Length: 311
Image 1 (cartoon, helix red, strand yellow):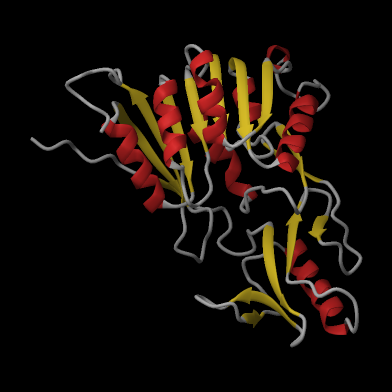
Image 2 (spheres, rainbow, N blue to C red):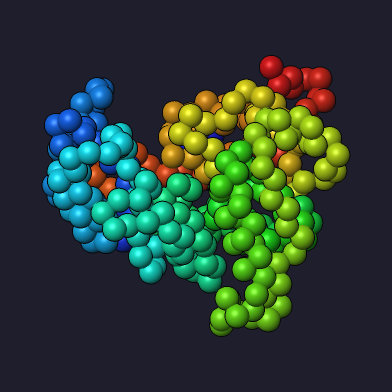
């Protein structure tokens, strides 16, 4: 009999509009246009009002637009990044009175700092359930957080595991991750959390490409209880998957923003001896076809099994 397909639980966004706390705006300095590229082109679609932006970013869009329209001289800006935190907005490059300041966001009991130049998820209202789904009740000795960014998953993992290693290629992101880990160790930051959870365990943040780091250090890590990966939309490189399979973590949690590349990478993991335990979807990007997905896997046989080659 065929296996029963997994049921995919979908978590809706608390807000279908005004949810996007991060934006990248394109600029046509000659035509004085500010907005987004038209689909399949490099033409800038002029946007005065964007219904998916948070109110703070909509206000920022209007002020930046005024600066672009009134600009007569100076360097021509091609794109502008902006992100909203709990206490303000960071813009890069600095424009219209905005700076590339550090902002912060409280997600559950953790506080994360970042700025417009360091990636942070766009829909902050869904991050707490996303983290809960990705980590579940996992705990143990060693956890690896690949493509860790500013430490979104690293901090909660460090409450559960004796040793956590975060790996990220972007040096600005790893600087923020180290600072977030350091601040996360302070009981004053985590007001209301039980005392036994106040101290982070051993946490190491590494600035390196995932495949390079796995190739150099994977064999020396010993048993890995849990591996979480949150790669970019393009998914994992071949050498990244090869390194994960050689590392052979007992449990894997794969967080993805692209179902196609997720399916491609899951196919390789399952062929190499992992079972797909669960899939959960999050409507992280309402009004678009994009979706955030969490897939949880468990190792069920060894790579060296001659009857089941990884192929």
